[in-house]
Image (cartoon, rainbow, N blue to C red; front, side):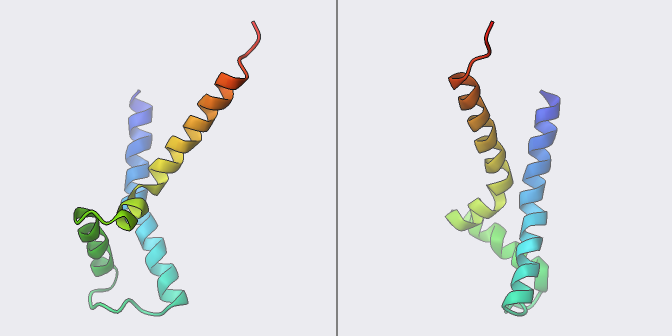
Length: 87
C-alpha cells in the first residue's frame, strides 16, 4: 500500500511540475516566448489558478499522469477478469 501511495505522489508531482515545464518548453520552442512577464513561474501560476477556477484543461494537464496509471490498471484488471488463470 505504501508503494502505491508513493507512486501516486510521484505521478501527482510529475503532473504538477514536470509536465507543465515540458509544455512551457515546447510552447517556447514552437510558438515563441510566453506572453506574460514572469516566464515559467507565471505560466505555472496561471495553470494552478485555472485549476482553482475549475477549468477542465488545467485539471487534465495536472492529473494526466495519474489518470494514465488508473486507465492502465483498469485495463489490466479487465484483461485479467476476461481471461482468468486456469486452475
